[in-house]
Amino acid sequence: EVGEHSPQVKYTHMPGTTLGYTDTMEFRSEDAYKGMKLYRVLDTNGKVIKESEDPKLDKEFLQKLYKNMVMTNVMDRIMYESQRQGRISFYMTHHGEEGTLFGSAAALDDKDLVFAQYREYCVLMWRGFSLNQTMLQCYSTKLDYGKGRQMPIHYGSTEHNYVTISSPLATQMPQAVGSAYAYKQARKKQIVICYFGDGASSEGDAHASFNFAATLQCPIIFFCRNNGYAISTPTSEQYRTEGVANRGPAYGITSIRVDGQDVLAVYNVVKAVRKIVAEEQKPVLIESMTYRIGHHSTSDDSTAYRSVDEVRIWNEQGHPISRLYNYLVDRDYWSEAEDKDWKDSCRKQVMQAIQMAEKVDKPAVQEMFTDVYKDMPPSLQEQMKLLLNHVEEYKEHYPKNFAKS
Image 1 (cartoon, rainbow, N blue to C red):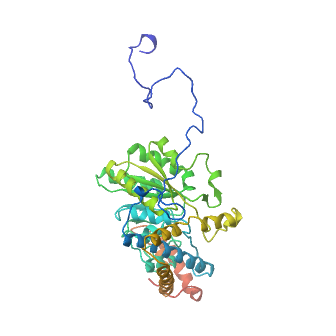
Image 2: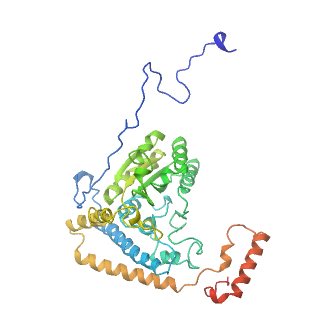
Image 3: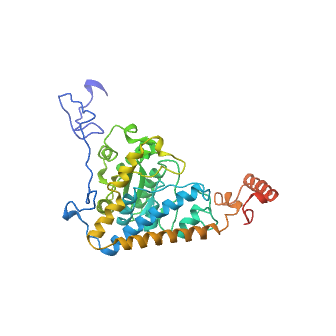
């Protein structure tokens, strides 16, 4: 029965809400929620703002942080020039984002599964991925873990729990949530961290992932590396909200924002968030506000969409490496002489790794066709045969051993 003669059943709430009713018509304006301030430990000169927030990490740990940040910076400069010289096809630097990346990497457990976007090499370096392994990948050699199939900087390593990079934005996000849900279903006390940028946060995959993770309470850290630009598009043209973390509560996700130029603040936040995610088995969203000092990639010229003065200011004021350097020097953990010696050592180590990689053969061309099907279908066999015949006919135009397995 329906209508006035149907049995009267009392419902306390409409489906989809638990907040009840009101007799007042009230609209929530778009600026009703102003957003979150940025948590920080160090000021732009590397001075501790509030002593109780200093994690007081030991000397060796802090030196490892700093030395890794410097190594990445030196390597980036050399590799950028290497691409310009035509020795590799592509590269992305981490200039200005070292604090965000190493601060987060250092606060994780090495068994935590990492889904990265593409500018998170520092996480791999922190976990022990060597310079030799790095150059074998960037120079597309046969000893690369990915068999030379990927573009440079698209790393992947099962040994380091680092899922292979995929260029299209945000595709890693639903995959990361799915992995976190699998851990939860298997009752494994493991977590996933998913890195993404402000540009990726505008993709549909990001919204689906936030909702999926919140609804199923997946043990995942969403780590937004907000560097101000989605290649050439500034955040002011991407979204109306004050950042990305403000979206978290609307999805039902605990969220926080941090000064990404402050490596100690990032470390504190990720350490605390990892504990929440692991113990409470739920997602947390971190937005790390940083600045990309370098071009987006070797395919980009950022002077077309931002001023040289803007970049110079960020490079000179509050750079993450400078902040940590000042912090270390103030505690007699580091010196100017040690700094010079380490930078010289970094250059030598990087050049030695490059020289090694350049002597290694490229992968055999057959590798283009393997590792997709267990048994290669006839159509692919025919394509491989045609390509091998072509390479043999014009072998003077291809690398040595290119057609040999």
